[in-house]
Length: 234
Length: 342
View 1: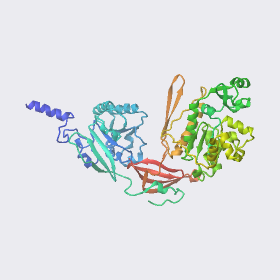
View 2 (view 1 turned 180 degrees about the horizontal axis):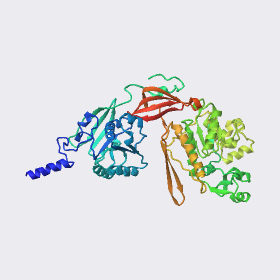
View 3 (view 1 turned 60 degrees about the vertical axis):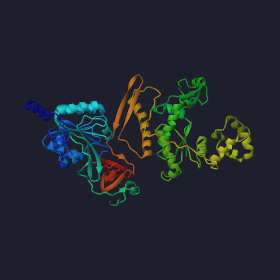
View 4 (view 1 turned 120 degrees about the horizontal axis):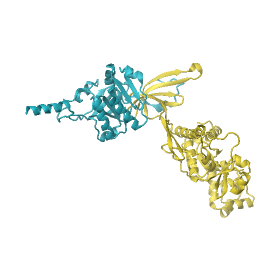
């Protein structure tokens, strides 16, 4: 009896098995996100290392990177390499440096095609040289994601895949799936899937935004104003 | 304003071809074994539209003849229309050879009819078309004036209004050579001899009865193809054709006040798989004006005033409809997106 329950404990401890009713307490230690509110809701108390995290957001520029930057900064400060794969825009290095990311540990990989991106993602995960991978993979099917999940398990890499919210209805091998939406000065984070009980209400994560104004004028209101004229302060 | 393309049958097939250095080869487009339209070199050799092909070859033994391609002509006319949407949103096709623009509302913007015509003419030359242009108070009047290459309706040859061949022959027999002479004929006599249709056409040209026209709706996505009339081995020749397509794209984008972040150029070969070249830009793109709400700014950045390359930009932080925060700027050419606060 004792032997078998020990064996069961060992299984629960070492394998990604979770029991209903609570967060998977036996989940491996996560990488702190830098947001206590979020850490408390994530199994392992942070971003999972060695498993896929899907971050679904409709538009770029809602503060989606703010959510992962504290973790990236901490990893790079500890000398871990961080790879960005196929970002849709040119990353702005001064802003990353200001957020504490050590740029010498940052690698940006451009991949012109979907298959190139998938191949590169797998290489990054298998190489074992990176601690984190941010990859923009809008179109990837279950089998391809599964392949990446296996590679991520082997490499113990924090792997965040940025994907459009339309894929929320598709099944995914990622144990953690988040949907991001803009929420004034904050970022609304809905946990679509995690190991453990579902969380109904979205988390409102305070993130760094460049402005605090709420109102504003439409661009067309400035139609007649040319830069030669002195624009009025907003 | 009317844009008339008397040589569109030829241009539709040849405009991808870089102009040769020195004397051009004679080219012609033929239909039913006779010449429909020919280029300058062929005309210089004595080839005329309507000549039998055999006669044309006797005059110009090196004449290269292409069969007429009505689909290519329609495509060319639509390409012109899509390009012309940058000048007015009211563009109308008048197949087989003309495009009509309602420009009354845009004349001041473009500095008058004369300047607009000069711009149209040079722009059309860039995408490979030679046009007869005319402005008129009605669409039909403009079309006739362009076709007849006439300044006024009064002196316009009656042939330009394209009546039935029998009607034209009868008009010539009774000594009516210009539209002015036709208009002076008693209306009661014209209708039974030439049909009410001719009178209606005249009234539409004079604006006495309104003419309803369907406006051209430009396609959502830009895609254009140019076939070269002969195989080419030099990159310059391909570049020339690509430039024509790019100028077309430029007109399409200007019409939508839009920009591109990238495009694909496919080179199709005979007997070989196509080569696809993807071209992307990191340069900022132009913005639609109602999609952004200004939150903060402006910050003026001015540079280059010391060497004549003055750049003045006012930067703002703006929120898009979707809730993204963007860094945008206003320059003399309009609003541009510089970056996103991701």
